[in-house]
Length: 414
Image (cartoon, rainbow, N blue to C red; front, top):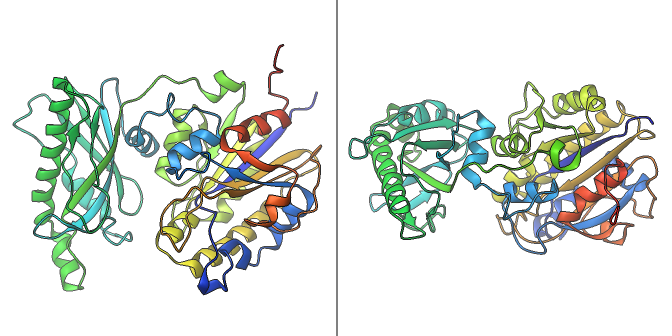
């Protein structure tokens, strides 16, 4: 039997809501997207409630869509980010996700992303990498830049615990919160104290970083703080190959998503120009997919900037970027044979421009390829897809739908 292949494209934060700047249309509805609409016209469409109507972070959303449990299989955001950017993790380490940030003299967060576009981010992170904590002998700290304001860091040493929390620590306009133990164990108390010491030491280092003098000259606030969240340690989870008998690969530029894929044992396909930002090279990404997808059962491609424009409340830019994605989809369609290959396109959650954050609203999904029953939907958007053959789909059912088309799904009772 000829091997079947599937391509899964997840457009981060794709879903949206009616927006006055777009004449009460969503960016998907406002965008000129002939290629995405073509896929809808030859495929089966639906709407995905990724987490049952709840707002969800991207790492959890991708775990769900890729067929994993968002509670039992979730190691925390920090370990996934660390894996994705190549930070070494070992058993017992605690990893965290971080943001470069701006705070005032009262430690109130002025900008939790430090403007997002930070050319000097690499040198700033290097300044705090390896910082020492004399009051905690045996503990080492390492940090590595990811994209934009993001970085990952890890604590290594004895007596660490992931049972700590940093409430309200990533919201602008409120004081940066201290890390607190979740339970009363000595390990949790010790870890919370270590994390607070790291944040304090980083603040002292960044206050005198030379890049801030240049920023102040330009009228920009100093990048003088780090915000840490998502603590966790690695878990032993079965790979996609072990759980589903699927050889899977990933093309992504975003560190967090690469971490999710690495965590699930997927092959990370290198792609020059994949940045995880609006400047990503979409053509290069689809070219890698087209060149390599036949080597795998499932090839997953991630695009981030739809989410970023939603967070920044920029509907015109989100619309324009969807049109760039559409052009890349057209390029992909010219390189693959949908008579032999399954193509799935969806989002991981909605990031409406009016809200500026993730919501639980459903996101469109379309599948096309051999044996797919066509419906009468001719455009890919948040309303039209609801009339499609797939109707309403829970996020946890997306992977079974993919596996069914790949003949990888075990029959109940067999």
